[in-house]
Image 1 (cartoon, rainbow, N blue to C red):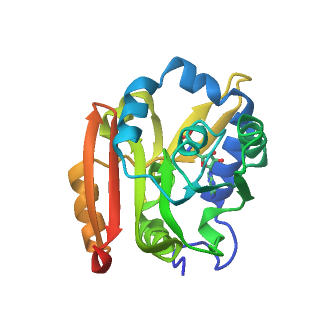
Image 2 (image 1 turned 45 degrees about the horizontal axis):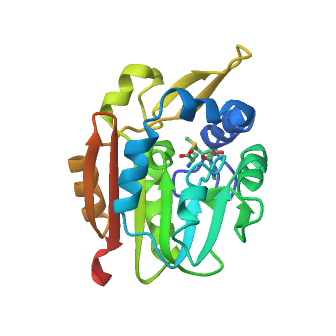
Image 3 (image 1 turned 30 degrees about the horizontal axis):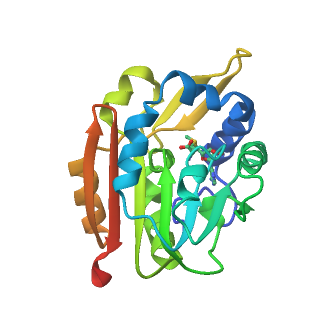
Length: 225
Ligand SMILES: C[S@@+](CC[C@H](N)C(=O)[O-])C[C@H]1O[C@@H](n2cnc3c(N)ncnc32)[C@H](O)[C@@H]1O
């Protein structure tokens, strides 16, 4: 139940804007990886995280992580709301058995359970009021004994963001190379604060700062931990 959605069952404005932004950004998204991401470090972190069995990747984007997950998954399912992002990801994963799903996470229901649910740079796009519903979704998506594995931006990333709203739905302005301006949700967590929040939501987690800008973590439902 997404209690704070503007109307039940319909996408909220912030979500529609965010998806529109990523649809527009899809063709230039990978330049971020070339220019800004320290992939050797992040890949090493991923290597140390428990990823196995049937794996679901949420908000897969252009498939930067999908390709790394595929080496470790028995089966791999990757979901994103932006068809343009999925087109790039499908190209990247051509020749593999990856199953792609085009859907809005906030209205999606899993049709099966997974051993690992992975999401990179997604949690920071979930507004605070949607966090509990998102982690409830993860609980439904995980098989017994399974875990959520995630990487994201931490507080230090605020220095490169242009914050436009800091109320219920923290929002930043982003610009694309064609000069167009877009709005995206951005909630910067830190390891300690997120660990406490997840505990309150019924999760046991281990979250570590991996460099000044990023954290990585795993979480399991507490009653299954
Ligand atoms: C910051 S990108 C992360 C992509 C990829 N995980 C990565 O790390 O490169 C955020 C992704 O979330 C997707 N997205 C945004 N809102 C979504 C929603 N409501 N449901 C599913 N995907 C969504 C965007 O299309 C985009 O691919």
